[in-house]
Image 1: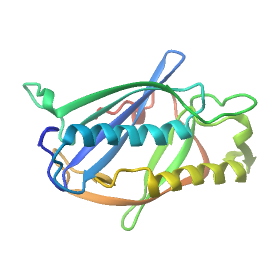
Image 2: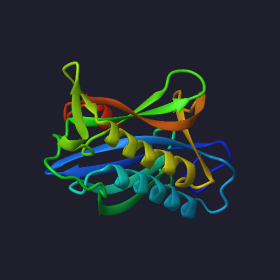
Image 3: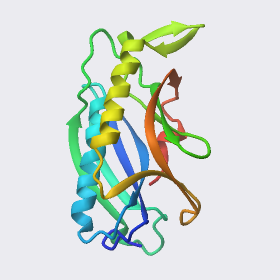
Length: 207
């Protein structure tokens, strides 16, 4: 597989880089082609745009969506093949406005990737929460009801209308090629605020 020839059922890895105040981090997604793609370059650009739209809606206005990389699922081999990786610069700010103070970057919004079978997946987003989004319950930080509802509306609307019909949102595992591919049927924000150190390996995984 390469990005210039994507067949039905093949999986790509999308990685979205964010930055703020000298820190850089990223989130990974796996997407599966619904059909053979006759114009992969256009389909990949549209996919990058779709996911940037989701992340901009979730991130505070201080956070910059720096760039998107899309790669083949299997790690690039030696010698390097440039057809296995595409990079799209964005340099766009988040769109979620807030009052008061932003929470530190180690306070993460936790969104579940729901599946019909097996364990749900997890997405942790830095730079999405302000002090007005969070209350306490049992000595633990939780989203307020209004913030959880607002975020649920964002991710539900995006899941239903924001992704190109050329792609399925999946969770894939296996090495070097996926041996298990599960459809993500919904995105659901948890009330829990999850704390991840700035050097946490979840945000440093290679595509």
